[in-house]
Image (cartoon, rainbow, N blue to C red; front, side, top):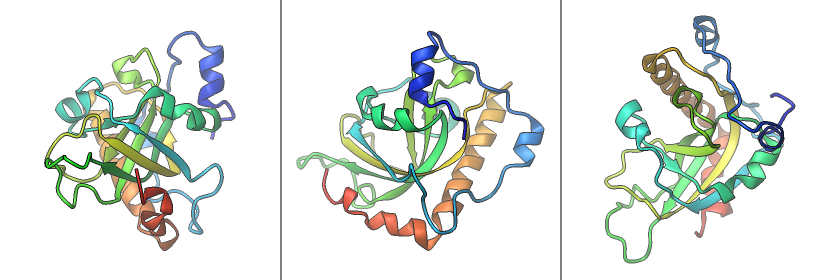
Length: 198
Protein backbone atom coordinates (compact mmCIF):
# COMPACT_ATOMS: atom_id res chain seq x y z
CA UNK A 1 0.00 0.00 0.00
CA UNK A 2 1.03 3.57 -0.50
CA UNK A 3 2.41 5.29 2.56
CA UNK A 4 0.08 8.29 2.30
CA UNK A 5 -3.26 7.74 4.01
CA UNK A 6 -6.61 9.09 2.90
CA UNK A 7 -6.53 11.52 5.82
CA UNK A 8 -3.13 12.95 4.89
CA UNK A 9 -4.21 13.25 1.26
CA UNK A 10 -7.27 15.20 2.35
CA UNK A 11 -5.10 17.54 4.40
CA UNK A 12 -2.53 18.23 1.68
CA UNK A 13 -4.69 18.24 -1.45
CA UNK A 14 -7.37 20.90 -1.87
CA UNK A 15 -8.94 19.26 -4.88
CA UNK A 16 -9.66 15.74 -6.09
CA UNK A 17 -6.36 13.80 -6.38
CA UNK A 18 -5.51 12.16 -9.70
CA UNK A 19 -5.62 8.39 -10.10
CA UNK A 20 -3.68 6.20 -12.52
CA UNK A 21 -5.49 5.00 -15.65
CA UNK A 22 -6.34 1.30 -15.70
CA UNK A 23 -4.33 -0.48 -18.38
CA UNK A 24 -4.74 -3.85 -20.08
CA UNK A 25 -1.55 -5.01 -18.36
CA UNK A 26 -2.92 -4.18 -14.91
CA UNK A 27 -6.17 -5.97 -15.81
CA UNK A 28 -4.39 -9.15 -16.93
CA UNK A 29 -2.10 -9.24 -13.89
CA UNK A 30 -4.81 -9.09 -11.25
CA UNK A 31 -4.64 -11.89 -8.63
CA UNK A 32 -7.68 -14.10 -8.01
CA UNK A 33 -7.17 -14.03 -4.22
CA UNK A 34 -5.75 -11.31 -1.97
CA UNK A 35 -4.81 -11.15 1.70
CA UNK A 36 -2.75 -13.56 3.81
CA UNK A 37 -4.01 -17.15 4.07
CA UNK A 38 -3.72 -16.88 7.87
CA UNK A 39 -6.33 -14.11 8.04
CA UNK A 40 -6.51 -10.32 8.21
CA UNK A 41 -3.40 -8.45 9.34
CA UNK A 42 -3.31 -4.92 10.82
CA UNK A 43 -4.88 -2.51 10.19
CA UNK A 44 -7.64 -5.05 9.47
CA UNK A 45 -10.30 -5.79 10.52
CA UNK A 46 -11.71 -2.26 10.38
CA UNK A 47 -15.28 -1.77 11.67
CA UNK A 48 -17.54 0.79 9.99
CA UNK A 49 -21.16 1.65 10.75
CA UNK A 50 -23.79 4.28 10.05
CA UNK A 51 -27.11 5.02 8.44
CA UNK A 52 -27.26 4.30 4.70
CA UNK A 53 -27.19 7.56 2.72
CA UNK A 54 -28.50 8.33 -0.74
CA UNK A 55 -25.63 8.55 -3.22
CA UNK A 56 -25.51 9.54 -6.86
CA UNK A 57 -27.67 6.61 -7.98
CA UNK A 58 -25.04 5.46 -10.47
CA UNK A 59 -24.08 2.12 -8.93
CA UNK A 60 -27.24 0.22 -9.74
CA UNK A 61 -28.44 2.16 -12.75
CA UNK A 62 -25.21 2.85 -14.62
CA UNK A 63 -22.88 0.09 -13.45
CA UNK A 64 -25.13 -2.80 -12.41
CA UNK A 65 -23.60 -2.67 -8.93
CA UNK A 66 -25.95 -1.03 -6.39
CA UNK A 67 -24.13 0.46 -3.40
CA UNK A 68 -24.96 1.60 0.11
CA UNK A 69 -23.22 4.85 0.96
CA UNK A 70 -21.94 5.36 4.49
CA UNK A 71 -22.03 8.82 6.10
CA UNK A 72 -18.85 10.88 6.05
CA UNK A 73 -18.42 10.76 9.83
CA UNK A 74 -18.25 6.94 9.80
CA UNK A 75 -15.08 7.06 7.67
CA UNK A 76 -12.83 8.98 10.05
CA UNK A 77 -11.06 5.95 11.54
CA UNK A 78 -10.52 4.13 8.24
CA UNK A 79 -9.40 7.25 6.40
CA UNK A 80 -6.62 7.77 8.96
CA UNK A 81 -5.04 4.36 8.44
CA UNK A 82 -5.67 3.37 4.81
CA UNK A 83 -5.44 4.61 1.25
CA UNK A 84 -8.16 4.99 -1.34
CA UNK A 85 -9.09 1.88 -3.25
CA UNK A 86 -11.25 -1.23 -3.19
CA UNK A 87 -11.67 -3.38 -0.08
CA UNK A 88 -13.52 -6.55 0.89
CA UNK A 89 -15.21 -7.97 3.95
CA UNK A 90 -18.69 -8.56 5.36
CA UNK A 91 -21.68 -6.31 5.95
CA UNK A 92 -25.11 -6.47 7.56
CA UNK A 93 -28.21 -4.29 7.28
CA UNK A 94 -30.30 -3.63 10.41
CA UNK A 95 -33.89 -2.61 9.59
CA UNK A 96 -36.08 -0.82 12.15
CA UNK A 97 -38.33 -3.13 14.18
CA UNK A 98 -41.44 -2.09 12.24
CA UNK A 99 -39.85 -2.55 8.80
CA UNK A 100 -41.39 -5.24 6.61
CA UNK A 101 -39.57 -4.62 3.33
CA UNK A 102 -36.54 -6.89 3.89
CA UNK A 103 -36.49 -10.69 4.04
CA UNK A 104 -34.64 -12.89 6.50
CA UNK A 105 -31.94 -13.44 3.87
CA UNK A 106 -31.55 -9.66 3.45
CA UNK A 107 -30.54 -9.13 7.08
CA UNK A 108 -27.84 -11.79 7.30
CA UNK A 109 -24.11 -11.05 7.42
CA UNK A 110 -23.16 -11.01 3.74
CA UNK A 111 -19.97 -10.62 1.67
CA UNK A 112 -19.23 -7.12 0.39
CA UNK A 113 -16.79 -5.06 -1.64
CA UNK A 114 -16.28 -1.40 -0.84
CA UNK A 115 -14.86 1.51 -2.77
CA UNK A 116 -13.24 4.20 -0.66
CA UNK A 117 -12.28 7.16 -2.78
CA UNK A 118 -13.13 9.91 -5.23
CA UNK A 119 -14.56 7.87 -8.13
CA UNK A 120 -12.22 9.51 -10.65
CA UNK A 121 -14.21 8.22 -13.66
CA UNK A 122 -17.15 10.34 -12.44
CA UNK A 123 -15.01 13.24 -11.16
CA UNK A 124 -16.46 13.26 -7.64
CA UNK A 125 -15.63 16.31 -5.54
CA UNK A 126 -15.60 14.52 -2.19
CA UNK A 127 -14.39 11.28 -0.66
CA UNK A 128 -17.06 8.57 -0.36
CA UNK A 129 -17.36 5.00 0.92
CA UNK A 130 -19.67 2.89 -1.21
CA UNK A 131 -20.47 -0.62 -0.02
CA UNK A 132 -21.75 -3.21 -2.50
CA UNK A 133 -23.29 -6.13 -0.61
CA UNK A 134 -23.19 -9.22 -2.82
CA UNK A 135 -26.84 -10.18 -2.51
CA UNK A 136 -30.06 -9.40 -4.40
CA UNK A 137 -32.12 -7.33 -1.96
CA UNK A 138 -35.90 -7.29 -2.27
CA UNK A 139 -36.07 -3.56 -1.47
CA UNK A 140 -34.03 -0.41 -0.86
CA UNK A 141 -32.86 0.28 2.68
CA UNK A 142 -32.01 3.98 2.77
CA UNK A 143 -31.76 5.25 6.33
CA UNK A 144 -31.29 1.78 7.79
CA UNK A 145 -28.25 1.09 9.95
CA UNK A 146 -25.42 -0.76 8.22
CA UNK A 147 -22.33 -2.36 9.69
CA UNK A 148 -19.33 -3.36 7.62
CA UNK A 149 -16.22 -5.19 8.75
CA UNK A 150 -13.38 -4.49 6.31
CA UNK A 151 -11.00 -7.46 6.17
CA UNK A 152 -8.60 -6.62 3.36
CA UNK A 153 -7.46 -4.54 0.42
CA UNK A 154 -8.02 -5.52 -3.21
CA UNK A 155 -6.50 -2.75 -5.33
CA UNK A 156 -5.84 1.01 -5.60
CA UNK A 157 -8.34 3.47 -6.98
CA UNK A 158 -8.05 3.82 -10.77
CA UNK A 159 -9.43 6.00 -13.54
CA UNK A 160 -10.92 4.49 -16.70
CA UNK A 161 -11.12 5.33 -20.37
CA UNK A 162 -14.60 3.77 -20.66
CA UNK A 163 -17.58 2.69 -18.57
CA UNK A 164 -17.10 -0.86 -19.89
CA UNK A 165 -13.55 -1.01 -18.50
CA UNK A 166 -14.83 0.18 -15.11
CA UNK A 167 -17.61 -2.44 -15.11
CA UNK A 168 -15.07 -5.13 -16.03
CA UNK A 169 -12.91 -4.22 -13.03
CA UNK A 170 -15.94 -4.09 -10.70
CA UNK A 171 -16.91 -7.63 -11.74
CA UNK A 172 -13.33 -8.77 -11.13
CA UNK A 173 -13.38 -7.05 -7.71
CA UNK A 174 -16.48 -9.07 -6.77
CA UNK A 175 -14.86 -12.37 -7.78
CA UNK A 176 -11.64 -11.53 -5.92
CA UNK A 177 -13.62 -10.62 -2.80
CA UNK A 178 -15.63 -13.85 -2.85
CA UNK A 179 -12.49 -15.94 -3.46
CA UNK A 180 -10.63 -14.16 -0.69
CA UNK A 181 -13.47 -14.56 1.81
CA UNK A 182 -13.90 -18.28 1.02
CA UNK A 183 -11.12 -19.23 3.42
CA UNK A 184 -11.64 -20.35 7.04
CA UNK A 185 -9.57 -17.48 8.50
CA UNK A 186 -11.96 -15.00 6.82
CA UNK A 187 -15.27 -16.90 6.90
CA UNK A 188 -15.21 -16.89 10.70
CA UNK A 189 -15.79 -13.12 10.67
CA UNK A 190 -19.40 -13.73 9.64
CA UNK A 191 -19.91 -14.70 13.29
CA UNK A 192 -17.97 -11.77 14.73
CA UNK A 193 -19.60 -10.17 17.82
CA UNK A 194 -19.47 -6.84 15.96
CA UNK A 195 -22.51 -7.98 13.95
CA UNK A 196 -24.65 -9.14 16.87
CA UNK A 197 -26.49 -5.84 17.42
CA UNK A 198 -26.96 -2.55 15.53
